[in-house]
Image (tube, rainbow, N blue to C red):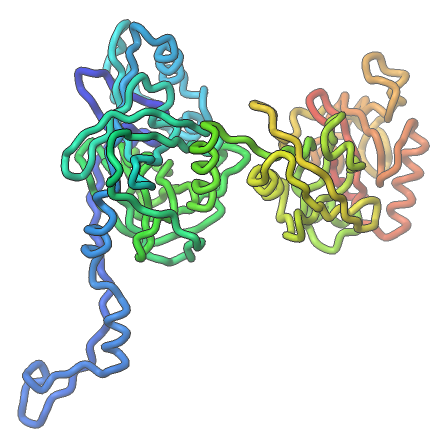
Length: 511
């Protein structure tokens, strides 16, 4: 979120605009002592003892987080930003983004759950000229002053000031940012002995303890604790969503702060919360350490992030699509349309192919494919396992570089179709006979609203390019392919459909 308060009343940066301070009660799990009483003594008297096995169990369970916190807290910093709205045009852009809730993915996420304040942030009135300020959190990752925070904390900042746990403040500069993952790297110059922490090399397990340290509500270093609730969360922020969900309270101003495992290593960067009430309800989202390490390394080296690029539009393989293609299981990413001149097109990947693995690692779905390719450097050689027209093959290609705003889209856009064919509930006409439809395929001229095609998103105006993997040019060919699909025992047929915005595949049941 890019919300900042007026300079007259500095406030901590909000993630999803929480309104109330939530107090945390941390419960420490302790081993249960087994007590035995000597004859004639109280069972709580001098004769009491702990069984060796349970003593070991008790020792293995930490009674508190004091030792861990004293180790890592000095490396956690408060990050305060300023934007001079009078002199910095980017500040005006930033202010406009604050005024328009739908401008960023995080603003959209915020609005989805009902967060909106009248006037400026926290209900404060707008002023035409002002110094916008805001606060977040961060943490040092090296002794020479490199620190990590969120992109939305330092976005368009004219100046950045960091304050350490002991109250010492320093001026920092922004080294680089990556809006797609909401990460930023900043640097404090002049010292070589800053306390710092390291990223974890291991993925946390669901149920593991987690300790979050940050600067909620501008109060300074604050510690909260909980467990890892889930992993691989997609909150609609972008194509690379892979958040760790934790239940340690994360509040306004915690953006960019670290979440630690019990060894003192950073497992994630606090970024967003789900909050119908406005305060922390125990559903927080962290950027995984594995993602942060890759992004931060590129920001330090180049000041920006470059990502590998296949050049395909993809969508998940549903059970119906898998059945229509003859795949044994519904996994992988089906190619809607390879872009002309892209690495995928040059390697012979076609619409209807299903990418099932990258460098031997199975692809779960289209989002998994996007994340995997994004972690690889442009120019990297990759091997793709592809299911092509009923056969499996391996394709080797060199990745391109993802253009700034170009991303493979898994969404479909608005489809327009029509009714006619007995088994689908569509009326069709050759594309060449319909003005503006092109020369390939058949145009949907009517759609039976109760038919299977309508129920799967096909609408009037859509163009069906092929049925069951074969190109069609007239109604007769469509009926022929439908009959063949049904006679071969398939419960659904795969249609390649072109709409006004995209080309995609739709598996429609055979009625």
